[in-house]
Amino acid sequence: MSTVLKRFSLLGAAVGLLLAGCGTGPSQAGSAVIIGDTSIPLEVVQQRLDTVLRTEPEARKLQEQGKLAQVASAIVTDLVRHELLKRAAQQEGITVDETEVDKTLENAGGAETAAQNNIHDVATIRDFVRDTLIQTELGRRYIDKLEVKIDFFYTKDGRDAIAKAKEVAANPDKMAEFVRDAPKSADGARLAELGKVVRTSETPSQGPTLLFGTKPGTVVAFLPDPANAEWMVAFIRERKTDGKASSSASAEELNPRVLGDTGLRMTQLVADDLQIKVNPRFGEWDPAVMAVAPNGEEKAGFVAVARKSTAP
Image (tube, rainbow, N blue to C red; front, top):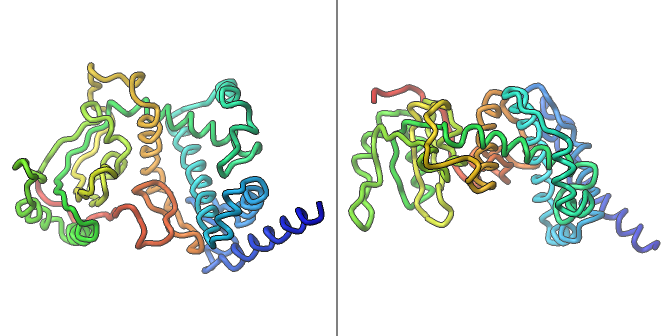
């Protein structure tokens, strides 16, 4: 028993070292992340990290490999998403019946079982389930109503995509040039277009992508399909949330993951309005995946408001 207690004490010390000195500026001192006017203290992350290290062998393996920061970043991601979903639920008038939370946990074998092999414990798993239900409801409300008008082109190189997206952000007139010069696919199909209208009612699988959570006048670059190496660069001209629902696709029939991921994407605008400031110790907020990235170089995409708009 004394050996076990000693081991946990050492783990706790390691956590303290990980989080010590995280504040890098007056506005960030003592905070793991600032979401609008809400500051989440470092102590909250440290307490959860302590718990994960005590209960999850995989977390201890990561610590041994010098990768404990990954666990801390995952916790910060969870805390940010929780706050965004809470605010989105308030805006949309979404309430969660606690009996649904109970039912979900019961189906998972109880709170203790549901909290295994992840960053949650019995105290936080209810929040996670509640957030998941909110995500799904958000997705159900919007999956067949989202519509965007975009200029876009594809490229096989992520670095090239981001570099060109930055050029478009600085001068949106460059988009027409990139579209004109974009290569065609092997079968001769165009991989670029101006003024393309994309609807989730027709392609619901795109609901979780940056296209549908980004404000007009914004340039994005991202990998639409991880199974396909082609990156998309798009300039968002218009965005609607009241499009006509498709009679051929029902929200009830869609994959729950698509609904949930689309619901999470709907919180991107909430995040934009609040402005998320992650303590650099944990990384940077990445809107492409709505999660904390280790640093700016490892983000999954690029998002920037263009300096000016162009005529369609």
